[in-house]
Image 1 (cartoon, rainbow, N blue to C red):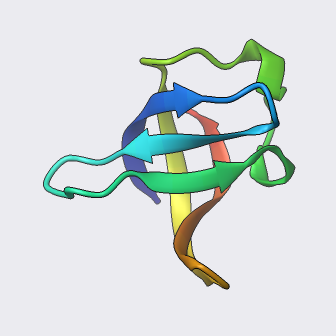
Image 2 (cartoon, rainbow, N blue to C red; image 1 turned 90 degrees about the vertical axis):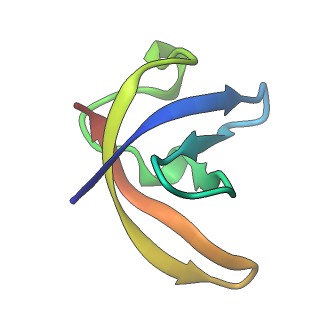
Image 3 (cartoon, rainbow, N blue to C red; image 1 turned 135 degrees about the horizontal axis):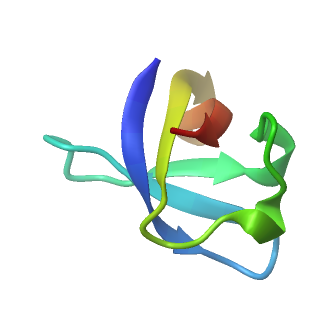
Length: 66
């Protein structure tokens, strides 16, 4: 599992996670949340996740609060 911080959230059910040492934020969709609801997330929250290759590049899966 990797750790990061929620950088941005949208009103469309997805967001982006910033990771130390990485320039590009990692996309995640609310379908990938584990034990947390999208509406309970806030920018700045610490999360854990796994990285998987999606159709548009890497994205976060199995996202949960740290």
